[in-house]
Image (cartoon, rainbow, N blue to C red; front, side):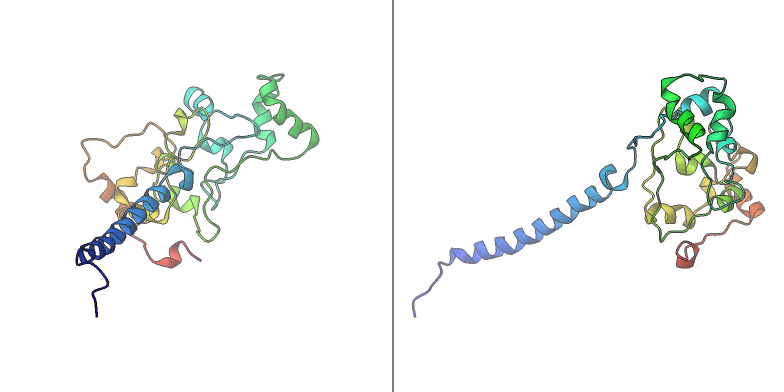
Length: 216
């Protein structure tokens, strides 16, 4: 029986197999890059809001404490959003006629909440409790970034499970004294290399990576 394929086709067949493997590896590499991109995670994307609220102005320039607007952050799973009354405490007098604040005045007049667009939106199957993290000495900036430098709020972390687990496996680098939790410009003292370990002992912080901690 005559030979159907030229001997050179052996090399072509081998090249095709290896080429397919490299192509699959390249595809997986590209998918990994896309998965970690801002397009998928939402990090560093500024979202349109009904009121262009500037944290840089209110927190950075005016020094308003996080808890003034996010009143539930120390006692609840949810930090909470400010009611229109909270906004109007100042803006009934300050910039009371500004077109930028028309949505605030409309909300107040019509007795309806402002429809803010959620920036940090965890999946429904992930449980996160703000009060627990605050009590354990995790600063706002650890998860939300330096909001005092943000003219418009944006998500700075991926919020992926791997990001949460990195901190849960080794929480000490993320800890600070409780009195510094809401200080955006706090930096770890250079002369206290064991500060994280000491705070972990004092606050009863343990490495928690069991599924039930976040998936309840």
